[in-house]
Length: 162
Image (cartoon, rainbow, N blue to C red; front, top):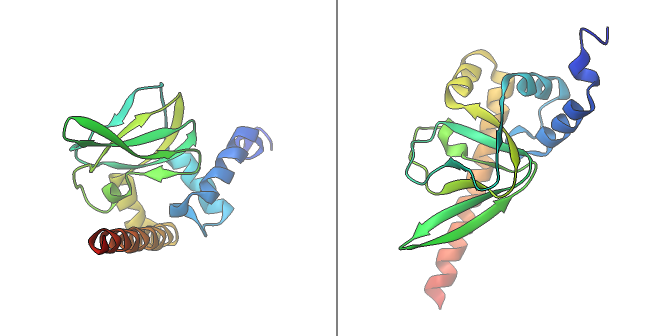
């Protein structure tokens, strides 16, 4: 039994399931559906300082930080501005699974980092074949995007008030 379902008994996989469970795009998914995602998503390691994607690149995937940290960097003139530093359970690049828009900023591994990658093509297949997962992810992403819009509106309003 353990041989057939070894991944289910693996402590690292348990940790990964716990991280996925906390990541906003996957909130509300059952452990069984998270397990399916964990099998299907692509793990990738980046070394400290390695660029995951660059500002202006065409978006192709959503990333979930499993270990390490990632800096989101925007070029402003000749200098870089760090917009955010993301740790385990954080995600980035989410607009790429909705459309193939260009990256607004760059993502760089701040330290040795492991991510899980959900490519747009995989997500498109989920929409066609697994509505339980895809509808939950879409609802979660819509919630996140609406929060971004609200925050940006508040920031714009406070700038115009000064």
